[in-house]
Every structure is written in C-alpha cells, then in structure tokens.
Image (cartoon, rainbow, N blue to C red):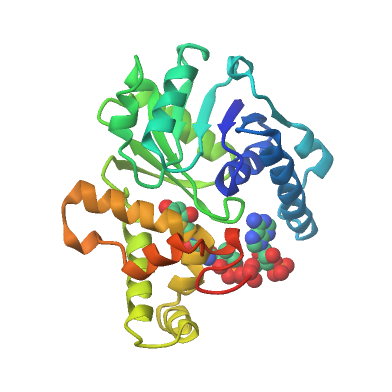
Length: 278
Ligand code: CAA
C-alpha cells in the first residue's frame, strides 16, 4: 500500500516507521522539512534498537529510504490511505481534509489519528464521509500493540475493512469501536493521568510515590505522571477539554495544575520538563 502521513511529530513519525517497516511506501508532509529531518533521525535510532533486539528483520537503510517528504499535496495522489497526525485543532484538520479529498482517488481512505475529536464531525467536512475513519495509534507506536479503529456514523464497511487489512499488515491487534468522545482508550487513559495530577496537587503523595504506587499496585507499565509527560500535558488538557465539552459532565474537568503547567511551558518530555525533568 502507499500510505500518506500528515504531521511528523511523535505520532506521525511512529506511524511512518511502522508502515515502512511493514514494507509500505510512505509519503509524509509537515509545515517544514525540519520536522521530517528530525523524525528520520529518531526513526533511525528506534530502528537501531529494534534491529539489535531482532524485533525488525529488514535493513535500516531500506526502511528509511521508503519514507519520503513533500510539501506538494499533489504527491499524495496515489495514496491508498492518508493518515492525519497533526496537533488537536479541529479547524486545521478539516482544512487539510478538504484539500486532500479531491487529490486522492475516490477509493482512498482518509483518516485521523485524533485521540478525542469526533470522527463523525471530521467526516462531515468531506464530500464523501463514508471514506473517513479514525485510526488511533498509541505512543510509542513501534512498541504498542493496538490500533483503535473508530467508525463514524457514515463510515462504510469497505473503509473499515481496508483499515483492518492495514492493521494486519503492520502486525498490530485492532479493535473497532463506535465514535464517542475519547473513544474507548483515551477516555480512560486521560482520566488516569488527570486523577494522578489531582492527587499530586492535593499533596497526597510525592510524584515519585504516585507513580510507584500505580506501577506496582496496579501493574501499570508507567505511573500516571510519567505517562502524562510522555503523552504531552498539553495533549492531556486538550483531550480533557474535548471530553468535558462533549459530555457536559464535570467528571471530565482538567486538573488545574495541568493547565498551569502547560501555561508555563512544562509540556512533558517534548519540552524537557513536565512532572519530571528530562
Ligand atoms: N523504539 C524502539 N525502542 C524503544 C522505543 C521506541 N520508540 N521506546 C522505548 N524503547 C525501548 C527502550 O529504549 C528500552 O530499551 P532497552 O531496554 O534496550 O534500554 C525498551 O524499549 C524498554 O523501555 P523502558 O525500559 O524505558 O521501559 P518499559 O519496559 O516500561 O517499556 C513502554 C516502555 C513500552 C513505553 C512501556 O513503559 C509502556 O507500555 N508504557 C505505557 C505506554 C502507554 O500507555 N502508551 C499509550 C499512551 S496514550 C496514547 O498514546 C494515545 C492517546 O490517546 C493519548
């Protein structure tokens, strides 16, 4: 398959790596080539580890050479699946979907890796909403075993089948879920991080002990604060805000400490500091 990826941040580069490793041809775009250059370096480092552990059996150079970059969307015309992985801004996403729809073939799948925005509302921006679907990956993409496939109200069976075929081709498990704010996964994962942040702001325990408690007492691979730093605290606040607005339920309010940290530029790993320093 030919896979088009928009946005070469943490998620987009992980999706590019995964797709190229499985033998797909990948074309990417972003606002500037610097994002691609940075992503290729981190993909290279990740591949080094995976090849060393024999989790990837193909040549690194061969995988990297199948990931290209363009700033001309017409180069996406032959894509079978387009995956949007830019920041959670509904207007920018819709703007992109409207531009890409006339470029790709009528049978191409158009999708978003959004963690929380309504798939049905994104699909409505297209002339043919039946070709639109949510393809939700998890960070770090090469190591996480799930793809959550989100069916919007008008998503066709053919579109879902295509994404199932893609999920199998990249060796991931998948679940197919109906469109609902935060879907199945993010709704729970974001609440876990948010409650950990509330616990920290209430002074119940130190950040290290909150993480240790959930890691050892709940058998989570990471504590909620470490996980928040990995996901990005700005992303967590965005997700909570979308769920709060959608459900109109106060249980989804973002912890004030998270908002304050984001205002201070403490976004987690990507900015060098969140609950911890990196
Ligand atoms: N590529 C290759 N190797 C990687 C890697 C990557 N991208 N990221 C980490 N690794 C390697 C590490 O370097 C390490 O290698 P060594 O043992 O050789 O040093 C190895 O994987 C194991 O990593 P760690 O020892 O750091 O830690 P770990 O055993 O806990 O595994 C983990 C790492 C898989 C990330 C694990 O901690 C985990 O599963 N954490 C939870 C992640 C999670 O919940 N993700 C979902 C977030 S929510 C989301 O993405 C979507 C949303 O809706 C917001």
